[in-house]
Image 1 (cartoon, helix red, strand yellow):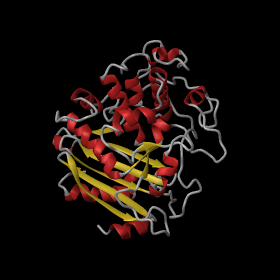
Image 2: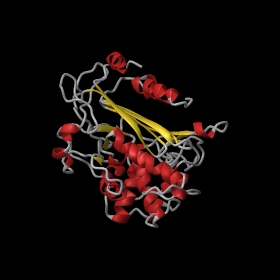
Image 3: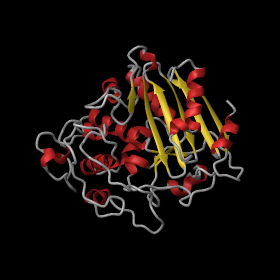
Length: 353
């Protein structure tokens, strides 16, 4: 495909993509610039905002901690929480909220309309407990169950806030700290991190390599680089190659080939349908193909102010593609340049969408 022509069509200044197969990176390609009108080109070092792909990384952290007995995926999380607890109501009588149903968006929670918007300049950065208590503009009412756990599926940022608070109360560590020693350091990743303004050294060290956000008209967004209050669900920044390295390690574990982070049991649990939704894995979305298992895939994607990305991974066939852009095109990934690129790469590598 003529990707430059399609980038112009969608007003997207910069694109990074990586294809991997059989346990290694096959190739990476980069197009355009980190900011419209500059000569700061997209390359191997370019870091994009992964937005909701963050949830996949948080899920791997939880599974790793469960693997070593630090957490139990099926235990009532109120037994872990000390700083705040999920209030009891009619929906908690028969089933309790667990890490597993939180990871699979089946804990009985709905996000309030308009919650978890990006920070505004001058706003105080709230704690996760303040978000859960409902005393911030990012979530204006205390979290409580709206239906019985595992009776329904509802995508929930606030559920991942609870996961974050569990890890903080149990280990005394934030998600950025946990991910660093559980995932990023073992895999030698130096350009992948959870970012919150003023909260770590990445502000000054790597920001020159981070993409600037653009709107559907190709103009720099007001926030330049949007930051969100729910770190565990939306604050990951990474390169296409480094997120590819995480996926490759996960697939090695899934196939019993010696992944560093998860054992085979945990990797397979992550990629097995959970609860009431056949497309819900733990931290990812599943699309199994019973007719041809090599076409079974999982997906993770992100879409925020000025950024959009997606990865599609054929976990049985051990191949996949990651596409990251510095633009919000005003349409979902399947309809945007990302969908066109993934379709082109998959079809050229013999995978049916």
